[in-house]
Structures are given as C-alpha cells and as structure tokens.
Length: 197
Image (cartoon, rainbow, N blue to C red):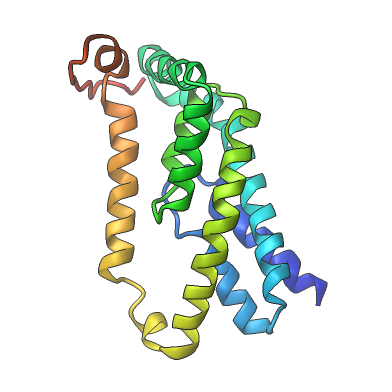
C-alpha cells in the first residue's frame, strides 16, 4: 500500500520538476487516489511534498540549463528581474502566495526564480502555503468531477486545459522575450527574440 503513496509522491514530483507547463500535479494525485482507493489527506500531504521537492530541484538546475541555451544578456535580464523580486521583500511573498492560489501554471514562476538565481528559501514557503490550500481545493473538485463524470477522461482536451496550457506558454514567452530591465527601469515595453545561443 505504501508503494501507491510513493507513486503519488513520484508523480507529483515528476509533474513539477519539468521546465515546461505540464498538467497540474493534483491530476495525478486524484487519479492515483481513485485507482488505489488511498487516504485523501495522505495523498494531499504526500503529493504536495513531491510537488515542493520538484519545484525546489527545478530552481536548482534551471540556471545551468538556461546558461547553456540562452545568451548571457537574457540570463542577466532575468537575474535583474529576480533582484527586483528580492528587493520587494514581503510584497514578493504575497504575490507568490496569491499566484499559487490561482489556477495558473506555476512553472513560469519557478523558471523565473531559478534563472534569476533567487534562493529557493525566498519562494518555497509562500508557494507551500498557497499550493497546500489550492491543491486541497483542486483535489476535491477534481475528485468530485472524476467520480461523477466519465466524460472527464474521455475529453481530456477541454477549453480549460487548453487555456491553462496557453497561459503557461504565454507567461514563459513573456519571461523569455520581454526586456525586463528596460520595462522596469524605463517603463518601456521592448521585446528581444534573439535570446538563444
């Protein structure tokens, strides 16, 4: 039985360690809970732990990956954005908490923090608080929908899942292609599409 809980942890970890918008970790948690009739609260706690570890590792390896695929000017631009986040103190934590509560992919948030070399301790606590609350709500909504409608599995590609993926990709595009230093310092929106090495 503990093997099934390990699968919950591993699934949530894998869903949140990848550097592109993946389905929310709660989807694998709901699926495994229903398949194996697992304790809901253990699934939430273990799943969120896997999710947090995945995001933590993402922030550790993404600076090295970014340094290999992006021009130095782009990584410096995102590092500048991270410095701005750090200087805003408690407001950054409130933003991260609020963002974690919304049904938006958190991958862009952790990509930005990782590339900007923001220490995980500056982002994980607020993310944990928001993620625990949001996951609990999403989990119960997802479980209810799954138990009451087999159409969820038949129609995986819905307008909501498509919109969520589109928003995630747009946010990653904004992170990568907006010149953040110019935007913050001069209040001027400029794009730079020549970011690859």
